Length: 260
Length: 273
Image 1 (tube, each protein chain N blue to C red):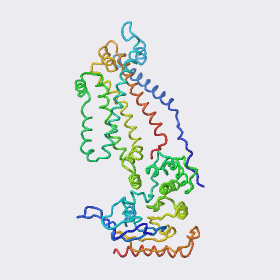
Image 2: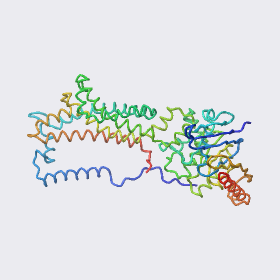
Image 3: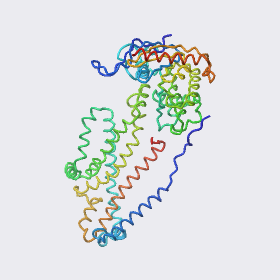
Image 4: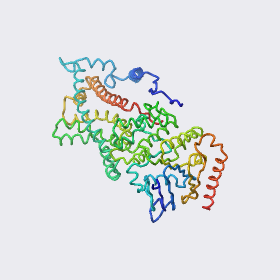
């Protein structure tokens, strides 16, 4: 089985080639195996969002190789092999919750009956089945983000790309959403690449945490999270949880020092 | 289980709209008569409102039908030209705005001319259009369209560019075609801006139709009536005022019609505060 994501010597330079303004990504090498949950963590401007967008072919790498499911990222995007969740829900305000979830299926030309069936199934998955006729503005921020997750999973992609999806939520909602996401990840058997700047969030969710540092953006460390499953409220109070949080924090600090 | 922030109902209005409209009309009428009283204006400068009201029911000429039926017929005639012009202008504006939104090069090279077209006084262009179209009735909708396409073009362009860049990225991640992104994202996002333009265009189309009737020598419309009553202003100023009121009414009618359609179409869209 090929890795879901394979990055080889990926560089991304913004600005003209002869006068580059920012080196956003430098020599990124990373392989993500099926069913992994990888977090990209790092300070603002370390290129974690850029890296995620490069995997999704929303940004083109300046050099290096970006492969998704053994294909170039562009081909994977055209084949619709990943779902995307942004920091804001980015729901279409003129569509009901159900119609929002059906959007990717509509674009892909799935017949109406099948669309509705799959849309409802996804809303059940995120436990919003009673809100299918509501409009986005009638839902709370956390519920809107769950709709966005349902939409990203509607066409059953093998890869889920998430760009700080819970960054705008309050701490309590965020922790609940973390647990929800782990449940969904188990149920759907998806591979997840998750951008965050919250250390506990990264530790709680991930199988591995890729620590990034800024200017130039690169992966300075990769930490395997060996916390047992199922992870729940108690996980956050587990001594190993604190150890891993400390490890990630120190790795982040070390990455900053390397720069100086 | 979480509870939705609000039930799927629309916000409640405080003052009934019909009452508000009646109140505003009453206030305007009182102001009109007060100005007349305070500045001691004669009938030629500003007739009494009841004199204008009376003019509507008086025959427009000896043994003729009452003015109101003449004006209604004229209004209907003008409305036809205005409506056709409105539709042509709106369609043209929508197509142009959509093209400009997708081709920045065309936008940069052509939009200045679109803007320039609106700085030329319509009164100067109208006679030329009449001559080009050999004095046919078509000069009315064409000139009405000339006034209406502009706001629709500009607002369609702005509206099509308005979606959240991440929403565009989302469509891109689905490998959506340009057409799919246009119809599923850009067009719905642009609707509020387009309706704003259509409301402006609705009233502009009536002005355009009336202006177009003047050099065309068309007698059947409100333009003809206004020209005619202008000549008899000294002896009967209230008839010109009556014609002006009728012209305003046609504009308001179109405006209200567009607003009603807007409310139906956008009923589920709550614009961000």
